[in-house]
Each structure stands twice: as structure tokens, then as C-alpha cells.
Image 1: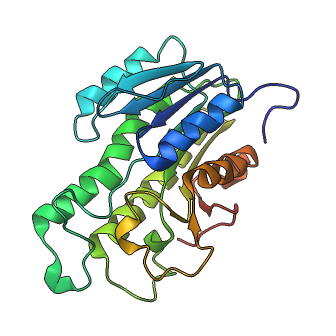
Image 2 (image 1 turned 90 degrees about the vertical axis):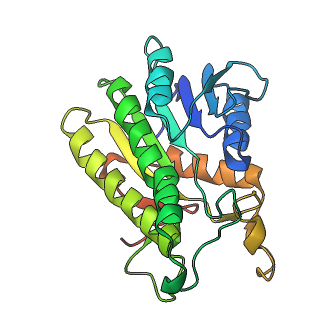
Image 3 (image 1 turned 90 degrees about the horizontal axis):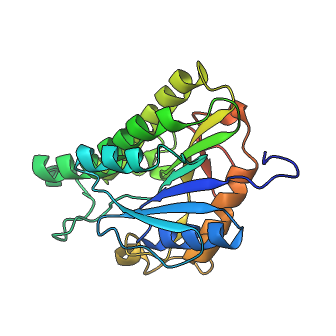
Length: 245
């Protein structure tokens, strides 16, 4: 839980601050009075606001992630949220409905963006975490990354990339727990949010199932506020309920 009587976090970093959820998180953290918010995007251009420090990174370029982490070394974040992810590729290639649609190059790109990129962010950001106080690393995941909850099949690359991300988060939680007993690593499922990622799949959704980015950001921060170290390595939905592996 958040530190009683103290502002937490003092410093935060959002990787993916130009996206719908990422931008909403930057705004929400600013409204909370967070002293410094590192806001990262491929362009390096971020929302204006008190305490916002833009930075550039590319999920497919580890050197850019390492450089971003180095920029934060003197004032490292206590909260890191990775809001990046892809469902439909830039060329319009969408999630596969059948194994016949699996394409190696497309699958590699999905894994690079949904799994390897967040892992590289963790590689360079987790060593910056303080050891004497609370710290949280969160990455957006998805309910469809659950193996035991998969009753429909399909969406092979997306499901597999999120399942792999969930495994990595569990690994990182175990490793970091040996040196940082106040740190928590978590996967977060934001629900279906009105962003570019979900836009091709919004038609036919039941009324009330589509969430605005601002509401999603508030929900996610609420879950983070209530985290305990016992939940480290798990995946939670926007209500704070655990998603089965």
C-alpha cells in the first residue's frame, strides 16, 4: 500500500506515454502531484505538464532503452509502468484466427514489441530501484495471455507474447525479491480501453465494456496503490483481481 502520510511515488516513469493509456497515466500522476514524471515515446515528445520530463526510446533498440535508464540514474523512479503493446501490426496484419495464418516474421515482430521490449526495459530499469523503500514495476498484459483461461484459441502471436511476458514478470519478481524486499513486479490487464490498439475490435462490444483511457488510468493506479509484496509476479485486472496463469 502507499506510504502513509507521504507522497508516493516521488518519481515515476511511463514507457509509452504517447499512447492512450500512457498519456492518461502521465496526466493522472501529474494531478496527484508526483514531483517528476519521465514520459517516454519513440518521438521523445511528451505532454506538457508540471514535472514532466520527456525521453526517447524504441522497444526494438536496446541502446535507446539503456540511454533512457542512464538519464534517470541520478533521480530514479519508484514507479515504472510499461504501457506499450501491439495487437495489429502497422501493415494491418491482425491477430491470427487460425494456425494457417501464422507468419514467422509477423510473430517475431509481435514478440519483439510485446515481450522482448518490456523485458529489456526491466533489464535496465529494475537495477535503479531503491532497496530501502517501496518500488513498483508494472507492465500492461492481457487476460488472453492466460493459458488456463483460454477457451477460444486463436490470436496465436498475441496470446503467446502476453503469456511469455507474464512468465518473465514472474521470473523478475523472484530475482528482484532477493535484493529488494519492498519492490513489487506486476502485470496489469486494463480491460478493453478506447485506444488505437482496440479500435478494430470495438464493434459489437456490450454496452459499458469499453473504458475511456482516463478511467483506465485511474483504475490501474488504484490497483497499484493497493499492491502488496505478496502479489509480486502476478497478473491483476483493473479491479485488482488475479488472472490465472
